[in-house]
Image (cartoon, rainbow, N blue to C red):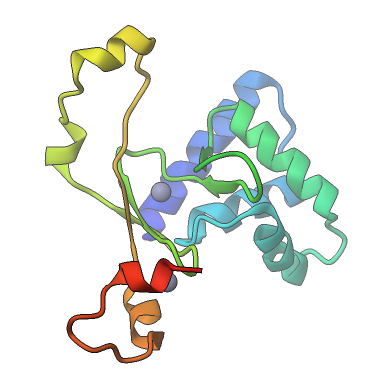
Length: 162
Ligand SMILES: [Zn+2]
Ligand SMILES: [Zn+2]
């Protein structure tokens, strides 16, 4: 995350919060900064642990409430199915995700080609379209290195057998 980018997002946060009449406390600012500066698409507990180092008085409850407040203001988006651990993303520019199925690593990538993706007619029949992004799933290079060396012919299928 470059400094101009951080400044731009903080400025957007300040304007949006002001317009919505939301008070930007020190804790709220720190929580937002943490998501902006992280490339990890962190979940609430990860954000909590990081912010706690700088602001020891912060509570997990405050972090949760702030995150959903930021979400209501349209300042962060969430990732993936909302079942177990919701992850937050402050990158509001069009982008796509690479997700490691093993360790849960999430990384942004950009592609003007994918931004201009033409969606099939069938999608508009399901409902309105707000945006679309591509989610690439795979094994990140770190997880791949941790795999036991395999014979060339063994494939992932044999691994997924319980
Ligand atoms: Zn991984
Ligand atoms: Zn992202």
